[in-house]
Image 1 (cartoon, rainbow, N blue to C red):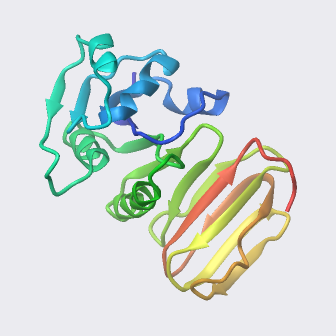
Image 2 (image 1 turned 60 degrees about the vertical axis):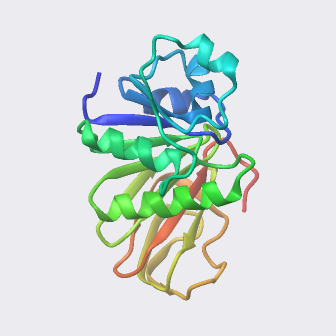
Length: 217
């Protein structure tokens, strides 16, 4: 077991895939409110369960009586996911996997997960957001990254600001030190041709990958 890798179970969509199982293997787990429903599918038992439990049915609580619960009032300043992430960091997390961070019924929560992941990356944490079928990592000047994607799978880079010096290699549409204006769709829908490498000199972006999507771009 890795003592520095934590998987935080969030309330969005989660499909158990081989890539998801590989990513979370050996990690420690913390559940945030209704994200606890993913524990059974993953075959794991979190060491902590936090939240206001407003999206947790009683049956789920009764199914996991042995898991330590840390309740919070509904009227609080942070989301359950942010509380769970803070708990992971307090316990020594250096790599954070936010499972169930994408999709789901709450677009506001999904957007907040993107922004929170970006702030974590800027603080030096290694962050992965995943739904099992889709994966996401922040890209900043501090965090050049390589994604090991299947040949022919889709990915996109969504700029959260103007980008300069954006470089993408081992892709159908490579870029070298490219300036991407904020709001441009130029980097949406690209195709992996191996382990894709990304870097940027200035700005912030989110890389969204669909490892099982071979529909082309």
